[in-house]
Length: 470
Image (cartoon, rainbow, N blue to C red; front, top):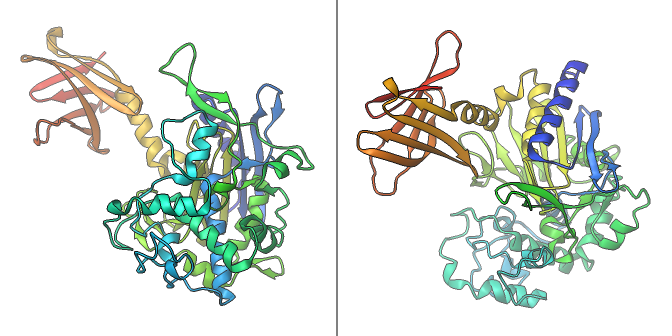
């Protein structure tokens, strides 16, 4: 399997279309296959005002993909005999909420299955940076963060391992454990034990490192905000970037996509990079063992492991991945171990979905089209196709399908008068959409039909009425 010129050109075109539609300022992507980087490009601008190009060497915030580095750090401490993932968290953080819940184990923090719901204390500084003071948390230290979480004791109603709650604060706590057991700041341990051995020189945690990076190839951040001209449109707007110590363990790494290929090579090679065994093969396997059902992913039953999302039914092969967003940047990192493929994508805004680009690349590498493999693209195409105006015989009644803000609405005329409902895709193959109505449990549908010759959407039905598309 190679990434031939045709596939490369197809991915180029896909990315350009994605960026135009999503108003993405700049995007970088690198792909590794069997130990070789087979595609590595930048698109658009890392700084729109200065006209500076995005490159595969540009430092971009990868947000929560950093959690996989934190999980690797924990496994290195397991290998060193300093802790076990079955240990109670209270052994290392002997204060509430953990002292009140000794059944919460290290593995539960790693898999977002502690039973503690998201409180987002660690995100407050990022919100403040963006000028959002709608929520205030009295948190400026480790003790205050733990006390703030413990104050929400009445919300801890699920047992560990019973319910998935994606929780940045629990990864902050894992960072505390790394610091306590190593006697080093989290960022220093990650650098000495993971980044430096992987030769990831284009990777930083602090504002000073970011500002003084020798290549000066670093992103400018753009926060999605309503347009001044049209409040219904969201546009990328130049913004301060969240390079914050509170976010180091759950999401603080700024790194180039080219450097992420070293990380991919290590993981795909069972923890080995060149001649160095960075982490034991058994540890990599353990990190990827699914522990709890998760809403993050595609297919019938995505799972979360330890710092990783796992899909087994979406494509022919297991897909291991994680995404991340920091407001002014977002990223997606994916591995297909069976094909020895790694993909890393990031952009300097959170308009658009970088996972779509990574999945498109994987689809092309598999010799298929993105539309064949990505459910989201098929749904987007269908929704675009059904939108429009329809008329019943003799123009007696009308139906109008519109899409706004991620919702699809059906505005209908029938003999009882006008109706307006949100509709939700129920069956892609049957082109059937369920009407959502809080006052009824009845299953009522709007269904569409294609012309057998042109294969275009031509008719829609509701109740006893048939409407033809104009």
